[in-house]
Amino acid sequence: MSKVFPKLAKSITLAAKDGGPDPETNARLRVAIANAKAQNLSRENIDAAIKRAAGKDASEISEVTYEGKGPHGSQFFIEVATDNTNRSVTNIKTIFNKNGGQMLNSGALDFMFSRKSVIEFPVPEGKDLEEIELELIDSGLEEMSVDDGVVSVIGDYTAFAQLCQAVENLGIEATKSTLQRLPNQPIELTEEQMVEVETIVDKLEDDDDVQAVYTNLA
Image (cartoon, one colour):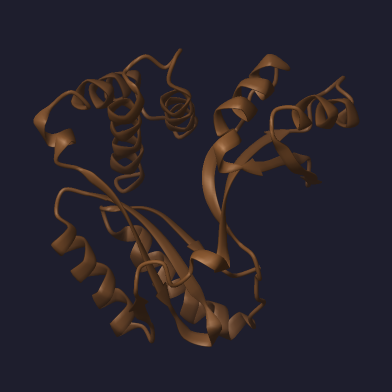
């Protein structure tokens, strides 16, 4: 949790900085707060993160993306929130170089990933999944699937606010609501190959500035 809580707080600060401190009118902030609560971030820390958005520290934080490739055809899209891009790029480059990978020029993997809205919730009792799907289509739903009792809703990233609101309007409490970068051509690796790739993922996620890591693994 020592790594997770600061990242959750930073996501709240960035959301408040981007769209204002009121979660009622800021869908991104509303979702960031919900995700933080699901990870047991305290109300006190949530409020402090929102207030931080108006401070000097928040004004110095920028959101940056980096791209890279690893062993066995693995590809990485990394989202970073940092007050020092030189530090961030050096840290990420070092992780790739020491683990059989390398950083790529910005935009090199744009065509390999699609930015999507992803919402997950348990299969609701007493509700028909087909009716839910029909209700969400008008709000930007592109794909809905069920796996192990969890419903996954996927739509274009521009439909994030509408989809989140539509799920709320159905009386469904989402367990996860995020913007993700999904691979257009996912690959499968052996268990041995996965170990090498997961080493890079783990080291990237351990970096304080890294907010999210996406790969092209199936």
